Length: 339
Image (cartoon, rainbow, N blue to C red):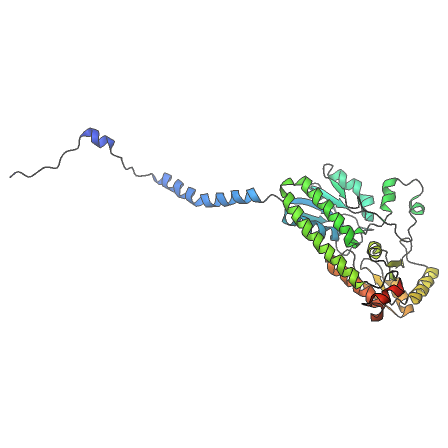
Protein backbone atom coordinates (compact mmCIF):
# COMPACT_ATOMS: atom_id res chain seq x y z
CA UNK A 1 0.00 0.00 0.00
CA UNK A 2 1.17 3.49 -0.70
CA UNK A 3 1.26 5.78 2.39
CA UNK A 4 -1.27 8.60 2.53
CA UNK A 5 0.24 12.03 1.99
CA UNK A 6 -0.86 15.07 4.02
CA UNK A 7 -2.99 17.38 1.95
CA UNK A 8 -1.07 20.32 0.58
CA UNK A 9 -2.31 23.84 1.43
CA UNK A 10 -2.85 26.08 -1.45
CA UNK A 11 -0.87 29.35 -1.72
CA UNK A 12 -4.11 31.33 -1.33
CA UNK A 13 -4.94 29.60 1.98
CA UNK A 14 -1.44 30.24 3.30
CA UNK A 15 -1.84 33.95 2.52
CA UNK A 16 -4.99 34.12 4.67
CA UNK A 17 -3.35 32.64 7.77
CA UNK A 18 -1.93 35.15 10.37
CA UNK A 19 1.77 35.51 10.26
CA UNK A 20 3.68 35.56 13.56
CA UNK A 21 6.51 38.06 13.54
CA UNK A 22 9.11 38.39 16.21
CA UNK A 23 9.23 41.95 17.70
CA UNK A 24 12.50 43.80 17.51
CA UNK A 25 14.41 44.38 20.81
CA UNK A 26 13.84 48.16 20.61
CA UNK A 27 10.09 47.76 20.19
CA UNK A 28 9.86 45.29 23.07
CA UNK A 29 11.76 47.70 25.35
CA UNK A 30 9.36 50.56 24.41
CA UNK A 31 6.36 48.43 25.30
CA UNK A 32 7.81 47.52 28.70
CA UNK A 33 8.55 51.19 29.48
CA UNK A 34 5.01 52.19 28.51
CA UNK A 35 3.52 49.53 30.80
CA UNK A 36 5.74 50.77 33.63
CA UNK A 37 5.00 54.47 33.13
CA UNK A 38 1.25 54.20 32.58
CA UNK A 39 0.25 53.78 36.28
CA UNK A 40 2.62 56.57 37.32
CA UNK A 41 1.27 58.99 34.72
CA UNK A 42 -2.29 58.10 35.68
CA UNK A 43 -1.59 58.83 39.38
CA UNK A 44 0.08 62.16 38.59
CA UNK A 45 -2.81 63.19 36.38
CA UNK A 46 -5.39 62.29 39.02
CA UNK A 47 -3.52 64.24 41.69
CA UNK A 48 -3.21 67.27 39.44
CA UNK A 49 -6.94 67.19 38.76
CA UNK A 50 -7.83 67.28 42.47
CA UNK A 51 -5.10 69.36 44.15
CA UNK A 52 -4.24 72.86 42.99
CA UNK A 53 -1.16 74.79 44.02
CA UNK A 54 -1.82 76.44 47.41
CA UNK A 55 -2.50 80.16 47.42
CA UNK A 56 0.49 82.21 48.57
CA UNK A 57 -0.90 84.44 51.33
CA UNK A 58 0.78 87.02 53.58
CA UNK A 59 -0.52 88.26 56.93
CA UNK A 60 0.82 90.84 59.36
CA UNK A 61 0.73 88.95 62.68
CA UNK A 62 0.65 85.36 63.90
CA UNK A 63 -2.97 85.16 65.12
CA UNK A 64 -4.17 86.08 61.62
CA UNK A 65 -2.10 83.20 60.25
CA UNK A 66 -4.01 80.89 62.58
CA UNK A 67 -7.35 82.18 61.28
CA UNK A 68 -6.39 81.96 57.59
CA UNK A 69 -5.10 78.42 58.05
CA UNK A 70 -8.34 77.42 59.76
CA UNK A 71 -10.33 78.58 56.74
CA UNK A 72 -7.90 77.77 53.94
CA UNK A 73 -6.35 74.56 55.31
CA UNK A 74 -4.18 72.83 52.68
CA UNK A 75 -5.26 75.25 49.95
CA UNK A 76 -3.20 78.10 51.42
CA UNK A 77 0.44 78.70 52.32
CA UNK A 78 0.59 81.52 54.85
CA UNK A 79 3.61 83.75 55.53
CA UNK A 80 3.77 86.05 58.58
CA UNK A 81 5.46 89.45 58.49
CA UNK A 82 6.00 90.13 62.22
CA UNK A 83 8.11 87.24 63.45
CA UNK A 84 7.79 85.77 66.98
CA UNK A 85 9.36 87.93 69.66
CA UNK A 86 9.06 91.15 67.65
CA UNK A 87 6.68 94.05 68.20
CA UNK A 88 4.26 95.13 65.45
CA UNK A 89 4.93 98.71 66.56
CA UNK A 90 8.58 98.68 65.52
CA UNK A 91 8.94 95.76 63.10
CA UNK A 92 10.76 96.21 59.79
CA UNK A 93 10.31 93.52 57.10
CA UNK A 94 13.45 91.70 56.03
CA UNK A 95 14.76 91.88 52.44
CA UNK A 96 13.83 88.21 52.02
CA UNK A 97 10.22 88.94 53.04
CA UNK A 98 9.98 91.81 50.58
CA UNK A 99 11.36 89.58 47.81
CA UNK A 100 8.89 86.80 48.65
CA UNK A 101 6.02 89.29 48.59
CA UNK A 102 6.64 89.82 44.87
CA UNK A 103 5.02 86.42 44.22
CA UNK A 104 2.26 86.62 46.85
CA UNK A 105 -1.36 86.36 45.75
CA UNK A 106 -3.09 87.96 48.75
CA UNK A 107 -2.32 90.08 51.82
CA UNK A 108 -4.47 90.34 54.98
CA UNK A 109 -3.82 93.44 57.10
CA UNK A 110 -5.27 94.49 60.47
CA UNK A 111 -3.85 97.98 61.05
CA UNK A 112 -0.89 97.20 63.29
CA UNK A 113 1.58 100.12 63.39
CA UNK A 114 4.27 98.79 61.06
CA UNK A 115 1.69 98.60 58.26
CA UNK A 116 1.31 102.39 58.19
CA UNK A 117 5.00 102.79 57.38
CA UNK A 118 5.41 99.80 55.07
CA UNK A 119 2.14 99.12 53.25
CA UNK A 120 2.90 101.45 50.32
CA UNK A 121 6.26 99.76 49.81
CA UNK A 122 4.66 96.33 50.15
CA UNK A 123 2.06 97.07 47.49
CA UNK A 124 4.68 98.65 45.23
CA UNK A 125 6.57 95.36 45.31
CA UNK A 126 3.48 93.54 44.03
CA UNK A 127 0.92 95.98 42.54
CA UNK A 128 -1.44 93.18 41.42
CA UNK A 129 -1.69 91.61 44.88
CA UNK A 130 -5.10 92.21 46.55
CA UNK A 131 -4.86 93.67 50.06
CA UNK A 132 -7.80 92.83 52.34
CA UNK A 133 -8.30 94.86 55.53
CA UNK A 134 -9.82 92.57 58.15
CA UNK A 135 -11.07 95.58 60.11
CA UNK A 136 -13.58 96.46 57.39
CA UNK A 137 -17.10 96.18 58.73
CA UNK A 138 -15.97 96.02 62.37
CA UNK A 139 -16.72 98.59 65.03
CA UNK A 140 -13.31 99.85 66.09
CA UNK A 141 -12.29 101.36 69.40
CA UNK A 142 -9.72 104.03 70.25
CA UNK A 143 -6.54 103.18 72.09
CA UNK A 144 -6.55 104.31 75.69
CA UNK A 145 -4.24 107.23 76.43
CA UNK A 146 -3.45 107.80 72.76
CA UNK A 147 -3.61 111.37 71.46
CA UNK A 148 -3.25 110.80 67.71
CA UNK A 149 -3.69 114.47 66.74
CA UNK A 150 -0.85 115.50 69.02
CA UNK A 151 1.38 112.70 67.76
CA UNK A 152 0.87 113.29 64.04
CA UNK A 153 -0.50 116.82 63.71
CA UNK A 154 -3.94 118.15 62.71
CA UNK A 155 -3.44 117.56 58.98
CA UNK A 156 -2.98 113.80 59.26
CA UNK A 157 -5.11 112.11 56.61
CA UNK A 158 -8.11 109.88 57.15
CA UNK A 159 -6.24 106.67 56.44
CA UNK A 160 -3.75 107.33 59.22
CA UNK A 161 -6.54 108.44 61.54
CA UNK A 162 -7.93 104.95 60.93
CA UNK A 163 -4.57 103.56 62.04
CA UNK A 164 -4.97 105.41 65.38
CA UNK A 165 -7.75 103.03 66.32
CA UNK A 166 -6.96 99.93 68.34
CA UNK A 167 -5.70 97.29 65.90
CA UNK A 168 -5.95 94.32 68.29
CA UNK A 169 -9.32 93.26 66.86
CA UNK A 170 -8.41 89.57 67.05
CA UNK A 171 -8.58 89.57 70.88
CA UNK A 172 -12.38 89.32 70.69
CA UNK A 173 -13.70 85.94 69.43
CA UNK A 174 -16.89 87.68 68.33
CA UNK A 175 -14.96 89.93 65.97
CA UNK A 176 -12.87 87.02 64.72
CA UNK A 177 -16.10 85.33 63.62
CA UNK A 178 -16.71 88.28 61.26
CA UNK A 179 -13.08 88.27 60.16
CA UNK A 180 -13.31 84.58 59.24
CA UNK A 181 -16.17 85.37 56.86
CA UNK A 182 -14.03 88.06 55.20
CA UNK A 183 -11.18 85.57 54.90
CA UNK A 184 -13.48 82.97 53.37
CA UNK A 185 -14.81 85.42 50.79
CA UNK A 186 -11.34 86.69 49.84
CA UNK A 187 -9.99 83.17 49.34
CA UNK A 188 -13.05 82.19 47.31
CA UNK A 189 -12.59 85.15 44.96
CA UNK A 190 -9.05 84.01 44.20
CA UNK A 191 -9.80 80.30 44.15
CA UNK A 192 -13.44 79.60 43.16
CA UNK A 193 -12.68 75.88 42.86
CA UNK A 194 -12.10 75.81 46.64
CA UNK A 195 -15.34 77.58 47.56
CA UNK A 196 -16.92 74.51 49.15
CA UNK A 197 -13.78 73.81 51.20
CA UNK A 198 -13.57 77.39 52.44
CA UNK A 199 -17.26 77.49 53.34
CA UNK A 200 -17.06 74.21 55.26
CA UNK A 201 -13.91 75.21 57.15
CA UNK A 202 -15.26 78.67 58.01
CA UNK A 203 -18.46 77.14 59.40
CA UNK A 204 -16.48 74.73 61.57
CA UNK A 205 -14.20 77.54 62.78
CA UNK A 206 -17.23 79.68 63.56
CA UNK A 207 -18.62 76.92 65.78
CA UNK A 208 -15.27 76.74 67.63
CA UNK A 209 -15.25 80.50 68.18
CA UNK A 210 -18.84 80.50 69.44
CA UNK A 211 -17.97 77.76 71.95
CA UNK A 212 -14.87 79.70 73.05
CA UNK A 213 -16.97 82.82 73.56
CA UNK A 214 -19.38 80.87 75.78
CA UNK A 215 -16.52 79.49 77.88
CA UNK A 216 -15.06 82.95 78.35
CA UNK A 217 -18.44 84.34 79.38
CA UNK A 218 -18.70 81.63 82.02
CA UNK A 219 -15.15 82.19 83.29
CA UNK A 220 -15.68 85.94 83.65
CA UNK A 221 -19.23 85.92 84.96
CA UNK A 222 -19.73 88.24 87.91
CA UNK A 223 -16.77 90.47 87.01
CA UNK A 224 -18.57 93.00 84.83
CA UNK A 225 -17.21 96.50 85.42
CA UNK A 226 -13.98 95.26 86.96
CA UNK A 227 -10.63 96.70 85.84
CA UNK A 228 -7.41 94.88 85.09
CA UNK A 229 -3.96 96.40 84.71
CA UNK A 230 -1.89 95.92 81.56
CA UNK A 231 1.40 97.40 80.48
CA UNK A 232 0.46 97.86 76.81
CA UNK A 233 -3.25 98.30 75.95
CA UNK A 234 -3.58 95.20 73.76
CA UNK A 235 -6.70 93.68 75.34
CA UNK A 236 -9.31 96.39 74.77
CA UNK A 237 -11.58 94.37 72.47
CA UNK A 238 -11.41 91.43 74.85
CA UNK A 239 -12.33 93.73 77.74
CA UNK A 240 -15.23 95.28 75.80
CA UNK A 241 -16.59 91.85 74.87
CA UNK A 242 -16.81 90.70 78.49
CA UNK A 243 -17.68 93.91 80.30
CA UNK A 244 -14.20 94.59 81.70
CA UNK A 245 -11.96 97.68 81.72
CA UNK A 246 -8.29 97.53 80.86
CA UNK A 247 -6.07 100.12 82.55
CA UNK A 248 -2.76 100.61 80.73
CA UNK A 249 0.45 101.47 82.54
CA UNK A 250 2.06 102.75 79.35
CA UNK A 251 0.93 106.27 78.45
CA UNK A 252 0.90 107.40 74.80
CA UNK A 253 3.37 104.64 73.98
CA UNK A 254 5.82 105.67 76.71
CA UNK A 255 6.69 104.49 80.20
CA UNK A 256 4.65 106.33 82.85
CA UNK A 257 6.05 109.11 84.97
CA UNK A 258 5.96 109.19 88.77
CA UNK A 259 2.57 110.92 88.91
CA UNK A 260 0.86 108.34 86.69
CA UNK A 261 2.49 105.47 88.57
CA UNK A 262 1.10 106.81 91.83
CA UNK A 263 -2.38 107.07 90.28
CA UNK A 264 -2.18 103.50 88.97
CA UNK A 265 -1.07 102.14 92.33
CA UNK A 266 -3.95 103.93 94.09
CA UNK A 267 -6.41 102.57 91.52
CA UNK A 268 -5.08 99.03 91.92
CA UNK A 269 -5.47 99.26 95.70
CA UNK A 270 -9.03 100.55 95.31
CA UNK A 271 -9.93 97.75 92.88
CA UNK A 272 -8.20 95.04 94.87
CA UNK A 273 -6.20 94.03 91.80
CA UNK A 274 -3.20 91.83 92.45
CA UNK A 275 -1.85 91.12 88.95
CA UNK A 276 -0.45 93.17 86.05
CA UNK A 277 -0.43 91.78 82.52
CA UNK A 278 2.58 92.25 80.27
CA UNK A 279 3.49 90.87 76.87
CA UNK A 280 6.96 89.58 75.98
CA UNK A 281 7.58 92.27 73.34
CA UNK A 282 7.68 95.08 75.96
CA UNK A 283 9.85 96.06 78.91
CA UNK A 284 8.24 94.88 82.15
CA UNK A 285 10.15 97.19 84.52
CA UNK A 286 7.25 99.62 85.16
CA UNK A 287 4.80 96.74 85.60
CA UNK A 288 7.06 95.15 88.22
CA UNK A 289 7.29 98.48 90.04
CA UNK A 290 3.50 98.67 90.31
CA UNK A 291 3.27 95.00 91.29
CA UNK A 292 5.72 95.52 94.18
CA UNK A 293 3.73 98.53 95.39
CA UNK A 294 0.42 96.65 95.48
CA UNK A 295 1.84 93.35 96.71
CA UNK A 296 0.87 91.69 93.46
CA UNK A 297 2.56 89.81 90.62
CA UNK A 298 3.32 90.24 86.92
CA UNK A 299 1.89 87.73 84.42
CA UNK A 300 3.01 87.44 80.80
CA UNK A 301 0.25 86.85 78.25
CA UNK A 302 1.06 87.27 74.57
CA UNK A 303 -1.72 88.66 72.32
CA UNK A 304 0.43 87.59 69.34
CA UNK A 305 0.50 83.91 70.30
CA UNK A 306 -0.56 81.29 67.76
CA UNK A 307 -2.48 79.15 70.28
CA UNK A 308 -5.43 81.51 70.16
CA UNK A 309 -8.08 79.77 72.27
CA UNK A 310 -5.62 78.63 74.95
CA UNK A 311 -4.24 82.17 75.27
CA UNK A 312 -7.66 83.77 75.80
CA UNK A 313 -8.73 81.12 78.29
CA UNK A 314 -5.52 81.60 80.27
CA UNK A 315 -6.09 85.37 80.25
CA UNK A 316 -9.61 84.89 81.58
CA UNK A 317 -8.32 82.62 84.35
CA UNK A 318 -5.68 85.17 85.38
CA UNK A 319 -8.22 88.01 85.56
CA UNK A 320 -10.71 85.87 87.47
CA UNK A 321 -8.10 84.68 89.96
CA UNK A 322 -6.74 88.22 90.41
CA UNK A 323 -9.89 89.03 92.36
CA UNK A 324 -9.81 85.79 94.34
CA UNK A 325 -12.15 82.79 94.36
CA UNK A 326 -14.77 84.76 96.26
CA UNK A 327 -15.09 87.10 93.32
CA UNK A 328 -16.01 84.33 90.89
CA UNK A 329 -19.47 83.33 92.10
CA UNK A 330 -21.64 80.75 90.46
CA UNK A 331 -24.72 82.47 91.79
CA UNK A 332 -26.16 85.49 90.02
CA UNK A 333 -26.66 87.25 93.36
CA UNK A 334 -22.98 88.10 93.78
CA UNK A 335 -22.73 89.11 90.15
CA UNK A 336 -25.58 91.56 90.66
CA UNK A 337 -23.85 93.15 93.64
CA UNK A 338 -20.90 94.00 91.38
CA UNK A 339 -22.82 95.46 88.45
